[in-house]
Length: 137
Ligand SMILES: [Zn+2]
Image 1 (cartoon, helix red, strand yellow):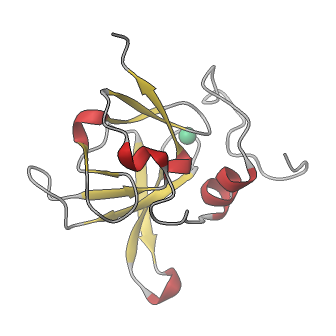
Image 2: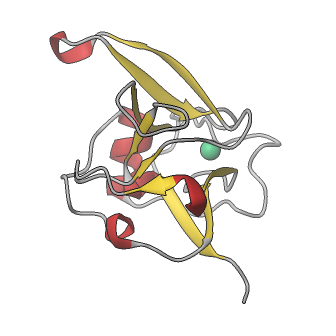
């Protein structure tokens, strides 16, 4: 953990779900990095459960909205209400919609308009930004 750095997880949003982030998670969530496609074990996660923000523990996605987009990143066609915020990202010479956690502002991934029904949306998320919690049996 780097001291003297603006820490978006400070504050009341940082509850019991808080955990220390690895350097790779810091690179994605704080510096808007992108993990290597196909590198996340969550690509193959098929169990029922909840995907939480890796930085602050806020529930972001349900397994029911997860689908295999073939992109190499965990993909969802829907998000839990008010869990994420977006803004227009014009970096890398592209116009994309960047997605971040509404609670801690941690970067999650991007939103594309080419998802399946019923939303037609594709939330393309770095697995490093997520903690999967399987439903209790
Ligand atoms: Zn968060």
